[in-house]
Image (cartoon, rainbow, N blue to C red; front, side):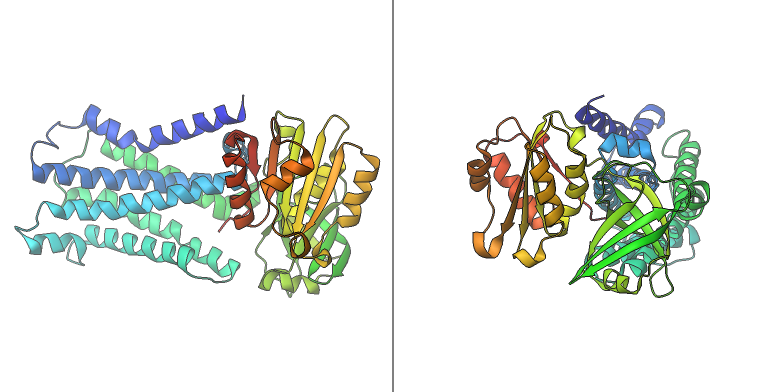
Length: 434
């Protein structure tokens, strides 16, 4: 099945699941929910709450890193984009839930409206308020604070508790301040959503690592030059199977490093016995890699991602990398066969920043269909599509693979589209899970 077809079907199924409460209301509701203003805003408030909880549960499913979900959306990085979009959408629906419930009392009965929004004797309502403020707090931490990755990940784990509190709310509130049943079968649907959400969260947090035995490697070699670490790892038992361009979650067993697994692109060729990752010092965790030693154990989860030149229809391709974004291209370049025609543009501030320069030069020497173009912005100014057209002769009927900083990817993609390149021929590695 074509990649775009899978993605279309995936989004179609997601939208259908999200709209399920609305369909159930029309099919099995009593039909009186929109007869007047008060009933209309109340029914909308209840539906917003159920739709929000449905999306909330879906975000947990998307966090499980199950391989078939990757296949549908074209890689784990794309799954996390969908996860982020749905997380924001769930927040909007959940916020709309109490707002619409109280609209029917305004301006006639403010005290009753306040009973929906303020702590009261109704614990079913209080649980909803706690869940709402819990979600708002966690979303604020995600979007507007800069804390260390492992601390952010720890706070994110409280989403399961917030979801559980919301589950109690949607079951208990039916018998207190709520009016009637939204639709026949409400409790069955609420139970299904609750079980799916709690199962997916529990699987990700508690069960996945027990069920999926991560591969154990040992560090074979470490090259530390300036702000870059090249780490080569050898398997203790059977090596994992992977394609170049994919990434893995790595946990280093070293007393001076965080125990949290972190994602890194693989820089070695497909299914090499030894896995190599290249890491640039960009924060507290990557700076602490200087404490690693040859012989340290490493736990590897994966591989993930679908960023590989063989996954696209055109064999005439242009690869564009900036900074540490060169890493997945190094392994892909080593995998190249003569049937592919590749131009690789690699942008860095100056020549001292280049990673894997000698390896890519050697590949260029032995493969006449691979052209390596290192680009230093200090000397050559900004790389743009007009310069690419000049050096690569044409950009028509080519696939474009892009990996690097968000600004670089956004600007190059915009220029390519303005020059007539189809968006379906532009592929990027997102690699930003927060």
